[in-house]
Amino acid sequence: MKQSREGSTNSTLDINALAFEAALSELENIVRRLEQGQISLDDAINSYERGVLLKQHCEKKLEQARMRVEKISFGPKGAEGTEPMDFE
Image (cartoon, rainbow, N blue to C red):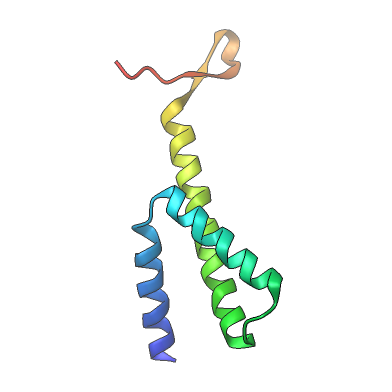
């Protein structure tokens, strides 16, 4: 069981180092292999687990990008809205 946790930690660190595009490409490949159904059960489970981590990583990267582009602003009377991020 200890090896499984260490492998999971290494996998997470590996995923955190990936650019969005690389993570998305790997996730698409995992989905394709799972849909084809030509891998063993153990490989399918391991691939699924990695796919979940890749999906979470991609979502995190997208949220970070969104936050860089927009900022929350409050207009008159406290109305919420968004406006483009000022990079200057």
